[in-house]
Amino acid sequence: MDEVLIGEVLRPQGINGELKIYPLTNNPERFLKLKEVVLRCGETDQRFKIINARLQMEFVLLKVEGIDSVEQAEKYRGCEVRIDRAEVPPLSEGWYYFELEGMQVYEGELLLGTISQVLETGANDVYVVKGPKGELCIPALKSVVQHVDVPGRRMEVILPPGLLDIQ
Image (tube, rainbow, N blue to C red; front, side):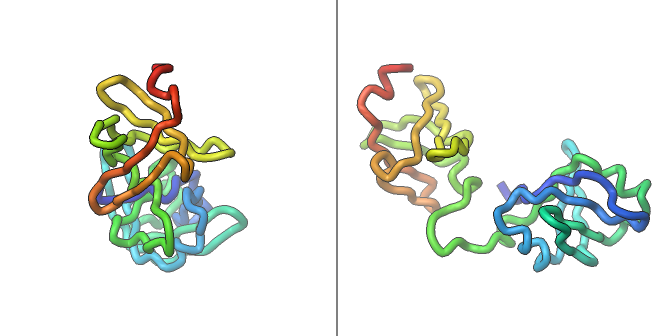
């Protein structure tokens, strides 16, 4: 995964081709420091240099090079806003969800599967793991997740009693 999803184009803003973005980050101010973005529309990616970024309530307004009218901006409605993975600032502790997706999950030496999705459930996150025995939902609790090796793409867990039996 070379790019990370950080927002979605909602619609054009104004008459000069500015894009109204719904940020998919807990820190929309990150947009203000970016130099370029990738707009993914279906299977097509297009890289744009950012001319200006500003916050408007919970949204981000982006002016990018090459989109200069409402008509041009309209073509990007619903597109994903992505950045290069290298542009993502490191966290002081923990990890990003995208770093967990694709990670292999083990209980001891037993491979349970690969994390396909992280669900936010309110009380705690849940890691959806797809493996040889089907889909497994593992709660993201300190008592369950024993070790996460992001560079090594490996997570070690101790499953709650009975979790494998309910499959």
